[in-house]
Amino acid sequence: MIRIQTRQAEGLMDKRIVVVIDGWDADSAYPRGHYTRTLGVIGERETETEVILIENDINTNPFTPAVHDCVPPLPWAVGPAELADPNRTDLRHLCVASVDPPGCKDIDDALHVRRLPNGNYELGVHIADVTHFVKAGSAMDLEAASRGTTVYLVERRIDMLPKPLTEDICSLRCDVERLAFSVLWEVDEQANILNTHFTKSVIKSRASLTYQEAQSRIDDQSMTDELTVSLRTMNKLAKIMRARRAAAGALQLASPEVKFKIDTETHNPLDVGMYQIRDTNQMVEEMMLLANVAVAEKTLRHFASCALLRRHQTPSERQFEPILKAAAAAGFALDVATSKALAASLDGAVRADDPYFNKLVRIMTTRCMTQAQYFGSGDCAPSEYHHYGLAAPLYTHFTSPIRRYADVVVHRLLGAAIGLEPLPDSARDKEALHNCSDNLNKRHRNAQMAGRGSVELHTLIFFKDRTTVADARVTKVKANGLVVFVPKYGIEGPVFLAPKDKNNAAAPATGSGSGSGAAGSGAGASSSKQFLLDEEAQTVTAADGSVRYAVFDKCAVRIGVEEGVAHRRSLVLTLVDRAELPDSERVG
Image (cartoon, rainbow, N blue to C red; front, side, top):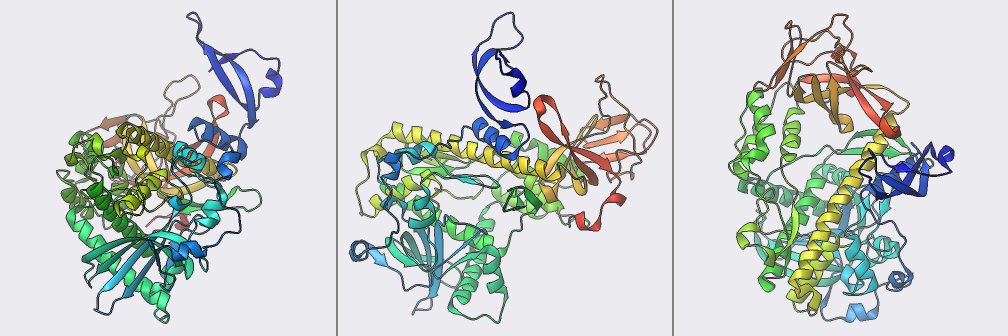
């Protein structure tokens, strides 16, 4: 808390406000500060979203006139100069399409595949040619470098670049000609790369598909048009590539992703559920990985000391301790000696009675790892370039320049590597690249935290006026309770077996458990219970032996919302008997 003096106290009691700390007197329990501005009424979606953005240092200021002056006027179209450019290949005849989430307007990438006369395939990844418009050192470039990334919230997007670029001029929308930076491969039937070619290009996308639309085309065998056949071919090649990466030790990790159905008028959530991953999601991912690796190799070959790369450091065994303990207690082993050994262990972590078990193990394993980081190739030894999660010696980001500044830097490196344009002097400055990498890592992390905060806020809004009984899994046991994960809603939180009363004393937990090996109810019985924690076995058991909870057990929780300190609302999870769980809420 911060002590402030103001004559507006009464009017500010139900508001979120911004204050500046002026000092902290030695004899005071609280720092002192002064009021600067009001964000809005506590609990309102717009107000709480603004809090999330401020807490994560997200720049929401409008772009300056100097930045807008860098944007070509609308309507914009590919002109004769671009078509006549000898360094730009005309690929408008190709059957190119994009595959993205529903509602995507900032389309960075498009794809194609076609059979070559020799029987092999030409595979193409086409990325928006953002650096054609964002010139190094311009006001727009400096602003994008500062922002670092586009920030995606549940109901809005804070762009790294002005909207005319992100949604129109650079976006690879269907049925319009657009400038791209293309990577073309010749591959055989087994997806072995025979040669790679990089070129600036002009494309004309045939379709802007959602993942579901692309999947429906692939699955509908009655559809035999050129686009659908190319999607099937690409999906087939992607599966071969994915299997090959897995065999090399690439990890198939997981995160608890949810999707919201938003009211178009109020922008409040109408529904929330698990995000479905389809073959087409993985198909696009494989194509992006293929392009990013190829560009990393090309740029490092030409600029050994100033390439911008991305690495994922090998975790220590100590980092894996939480999941190793949980796995051992559950009766299966994880080998973390290498990424390949871990990948094989994860594939074998299955339970016949719980289809969600394997994904939960992957989620918990993912949490043990550090985040991947951007770095300049001159900042560390080549032995440290490795990307652990992808099992790739080299990796970078090239495929999303509309929304990531790292990709803008890499586009300039690739353009210089293939002789299109000289590398800006600033890109050769080792210290400048180091500072750029640090800012990119910071901005990427902040954007992730803001995105998660937005998901949490909308989850709170969704449950504010309703209570739901949901399927859950135990992820951690403690002396006075459990930590449980609710897959459908992506929620994880504590469930107290011995909740604290208003005097901060342990209140008795009530409930009739379902016995050993299955988490049952934490509420409903009249007798008080004491619980004993066994850290090695990862269990917590009632002293009388009537109830036992173990990591990975299935359970059911009632989800509600309560208001806490500083008017902060939070989700409250309460154990209930699984008999109360509706069939519609069961996972797996």
